[in-house]
Image 1: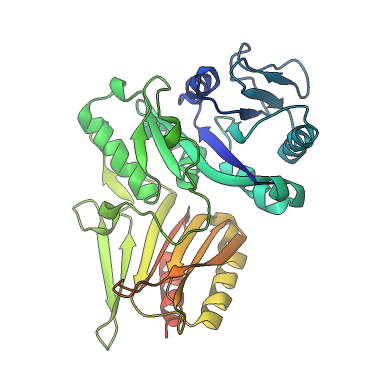
Image 2: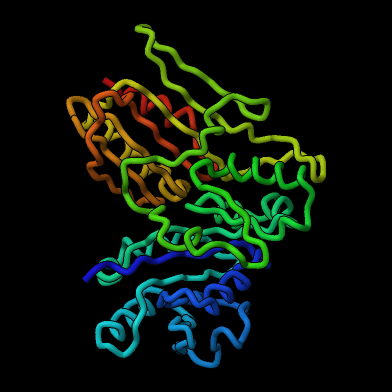
Length: 353
């Protein structure tokens, strides 16, 4: 039986997750979606959408969607839903997990990799983060959880864009891209976003494409770029986030603990050295490594190697063959909290052939 695609829907308090969920639940889209509210604290979703009066209740909507409130272990809730589905008691073909507004999405994402039963039934499709255009700058300044939610995202939906002007929206968009260059950004006004921008994104799957915003790797006034050249003329491009950047919204400087950097090289990696170095990185810095992903050129290999991870959980897989005319090289992105970029870059350079 095919694995059930699962989406983690996150975003800070008041960002608009409930509004988006309402639309998903009420629209006649023909999909059978199980929506799990992963709720540990105060209720933050309307009672008419999800029931709250027991430890776990399941209610089926008239359009085929299923709502389930979870007060506790997400693994238990996912397993319970899968058992009911296998027994023919309920029917659904997708899962959306809505986290609380102050939640760190990391442990929720890890659920799909640390539990054998969950892994046997579910596939983590993507982490979708809703960002409140009106309040996001302040939230990113004051709350690490808001930065983590952006850092973990495979897709970012900006809500309440009508409440800010074009300059404020551009400044926010630029900041979001600096925190997480690999997540596409679009707008969701009053919960209106195509389901194709929420479901079946394949954002978390291993594949042979690394989605990094092209502008992230081009020089502009807001970014610093360092180019390290070696003796034979080949070079690695390292992008550094300019942590303090101006914001038209309230003319302040922001220093985000969560930030991203990219490593690129057209020289192949030595597989053994790279494996050893990546393992040491995860061992030392894993708790601070939110998301990392890359397409790698390995010495002597005719296929791409794709790797990605969340915190200490890292995996790799063979990708497609390198094309005859394709420019070969490695491209890696790391998103994390106060990561020592120079340690990462120097170590990766030493793993090159």
